[in-house]
Image 1 (cartoon, one colour):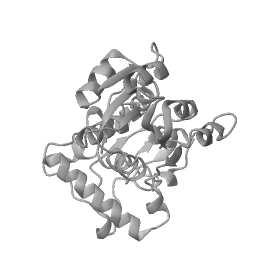
Image 2 (image 1 turned 45 degrees about the vertical axis):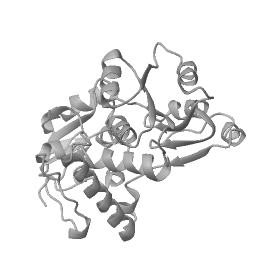
Image 3 (image 1 turned 120 degrees about the vertical axis):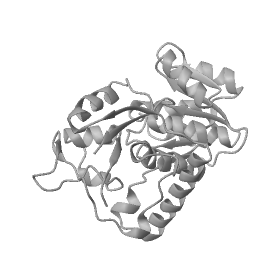
Image 4 (image 1 turned 180 degrees about the horizontal axis):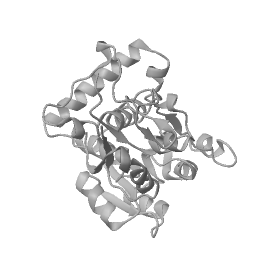
Length: 278
């Protein structure tokens, strides 16, 4: 299989810098070490072709070209597992999406809007707030200038949101316990430290805390869950072709420009996805 394009996110930045091993990106065809003739990005050489079992290949949305379609699989699948499998969101639930203008966040907001959930999100700027509201969010909280807890409680009328999606991680994971209402659900997708004091707040509030790692079926060679993910990706493709879902692409870069793109990602300067044209 020839690789035409690949989207890049925070994990790609970590692989480029040598912080995360390339084997952790086994769900993606691109950031794997290969021969010395392959293009190099940072400390990692990139694949331009890959052998793939036919049963594990999903269809491309017919309405998108390869570059556009490459923005979808990782965020589409991760957000799907977060919203539907782990979050178990129902219509009219009050939901908080951290990082609503990011790759995961803007896809999750569209899923939530489609099932009738009420969605708030955290963003860093007015431009990102406008973007997230356009994706279907009801409330955009500027976390740099506004008190997230105060805004969230005023909006939901309760002690937080029914479901919180932490697509930011790190210190934000610990803060997310405060944003989740009693008997609520908190879903994390980024490796993070537990809050100081351990799980005391989660236990007191009777929270369900869960995690999403879509790469595990590839790394563990889990045939059943690989097939399940292919089925989900095909459903995502149908949603795109029906006009019910779209991935926003902030920029398309070449191999030579991926370093600058990663720096923009790390600085929070991008909206949606960054795509690498192969």
